[in-house]
Structure formats: C-alpha cells, structure tokens
Amino acid sequence: MALPVATAAVTSAAAASSIRRSTARVAASSAATAVASLRRGRRYLSTYEPAAPLHHEWVVDGRVLPPGETPPPAKNGERGTVLFLHGLLGSGKNLRGPAKRLTKDDGGLAALLVDLRGHGSTSALSSSSGRGGATLSPPHTLEACAEDVIGTARSLGLVGDGRSPVGVVGHSFGGRVALEYAAMAQAGGSSADVRPPRASWILDSVPGSAHGSVADVVNAVSAVPIPIPSKNHLVEDLTKNRGVDKAIAMWMTTNLTKSDCGNGFRFAFDLNVALEVLDEFPRQDYAGRLRAAAGGRMGGGTLSSGRSSVVNVVMAGKNGAWTDDVVAEVEAVGRDVAGRVRSHRLPNAGHWVHVDDLDGLMGLMEGSFG
Image 1 (tube, rainbow, N blue to C red):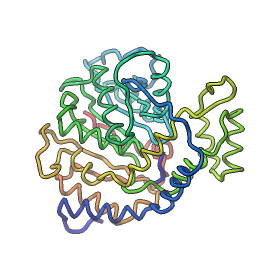
Image 2 (image 1 turned 45 degrees about the horizontal axis):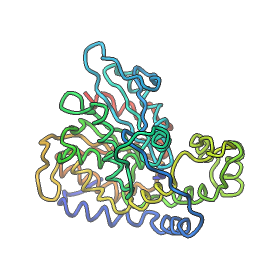
Image 3 (image 1 turned 60 degrees about the vertical axis):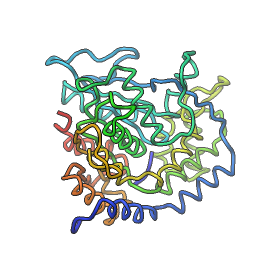
Image 4 (image 1 turned 135 degrees about the vertical axis):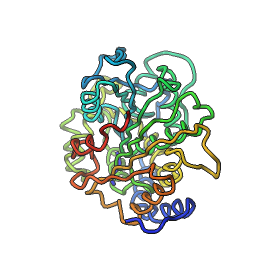
C-alpha cells in the first residue's frame, strides 16, 4: 500500500537528479517522523524466514485456480504469463480484479499473483513447509524483493525466450519491485535466464519518499494489540482510536490470519519487513530504474539483454503527489529512451486505480503484452 507538459529534452543525469530533488519533498518529513516513532515504540517479533518460491496463485480465463493447479495450454498454444505484484501491507489477492479481467479478455494470458516477502501467505508457507534450502533473509530491500520474484519465476520454469513472463503489473510498493525486476531482467547476470517483460505497468508508484499517510497507517497498525478479537473489533479500533479511514480499516481486515495462540487474529504481514521496505523508498533511483527497465542505458553501459521493453507509469488523477515537476521528469526519461517509458493518467481514480477505474486501466493495458 502507498498513497500517491514536459518541455525541452534533458540529459539522463539531469532527469534522475531532478526527480530525486522534486520527489524528496513529497511527505518526506511526515513519513520519516512516523516511521521513527514506530521504531522507538513497540516492536513486532519478526518470524519471516520464507523459502522460495513465494506463495502464489494462478488466474486463468477469469478464475482463480485451486492451489497446486497450473495453467493448461491455451487453445492456440503456449500461454503468456503476466506477474502481479501487490502493495505494502497487502497480498496477491488484492489484484485479483484486474488479473481476472485481463485473463478473461485475453485467453492467451495467465496471471501469476505472488505474495511478496513478509506479506500474505509467504511467511506461512515457509514456516509450515518444513523444506530446507536457502531462506530469504535480511536485508529486506526492493532489490531483494525483485530477486525473490525472479527466483519464483525460475522455480516455476518461467525462463527462456518462450516461457519468461511477458509482463509485470505492480501497484504502489509492487510497482517499485516491478521496476527492479524488469531492470534486473534487462541487465542479465544471475537473472539472465528470466527474460525482460514486453511491458511493465507501474500503478500509482510515485517516486521519492512514501506519502506520510502510509507511515501513519503503519504506525496505527503497529499499536493494535495482538491477538485481535474479531474483524469488527479491528475496524472499530483503527477508526475510533487511531484515526484511520474506515475504507482502509476495512481493507486491513483482509490481511488478518488466525493467531498462533488459537484465539482471535494477527496480521498476515511482518511489520519489520514493511518498515525496512518503507525506508528503501527514498533511496530508489526511480529515474534510473525506469530507464533500465525499458532497456535503456544504465551506468553508462549497454544492457546485456539487448531487448527493449515498454514501461507504463499509470498516475492516479486524485493523487496530489504527482506534481507537474514529477510528471515532467518521468516524461523526460521517456524521451531519453525513445518513448519506451510512457505516462498515463486516470483522472477519476484514487490510489487504488485498479479498483476506482478498472475499465480505464484495462483499456490502457489492452494488447500491450502481445
């Protein structure tokens, strides 16, 4: 979860520098204050030691497949896979809506929805599986999250020119991970067997620090006593005692799981992981990652994949964090890579663009993965 025209061409360095300057001011002070307050207060015991692959589910022909079932071949041959990466404090199921719509409209695509590290059922999978092997250990960085996704794709055989995911869709925090994933796939190296996606869709991921309201929600959630007696109790606690909007409080009930003691509920996510990831936001080279994900030049070198991809940045019209300066610099990066970074605005959508304007979003995506 996260809450939020160009003029003459600028150089790559200037675009990156300007984005960092203009976005560092976006709620940086309030976010830093809230996170610092949380770190000084109650700490959650981190139990996050997931084993690859990340917990995931498949969506095919508009329906969620039962656990353990894999997509059958499409009528006209191999299906293309599109990855869906959720926002902070969320899980893969938050993106079922667009995944169902996409795969229903295009029978040649399958959607793979993953729970990123420290989120959803990924932690439960690791603690209950009893499997050996490497664990996804700290530091919990955006790059590490992307490596998890690459490892999951590899473990599912989604490698090579014919099987690698044809697209990636990331919302908010997931959009930042999607940029890292696409840039890594372009760069090759240890991820050379996972080829770059044809299209990346970055849904309302504003560069720079997280919006202050995000840290406020994390702060509020951290103060909720565990176990939580019921979902209704959580909504009442968050709205009446901690000032959280009712819509967000109700959404938080989707992130509950049975507590370890057997009474009531606990949050499915690991707050320590969320905090580390939140700290990463202002450090991400957003402009550089846009350029690299599109197959541009990174650090003055040519990317080893030799492939160009299109990166689409979708901006929520109701998110004020998309200032004119930020939008202009994203578009400047697009000019710098021959139009392979494209910006889109959904004027009537808030941060949850895939909920507020699903029709508009799907209209933008149509045909982009072919």
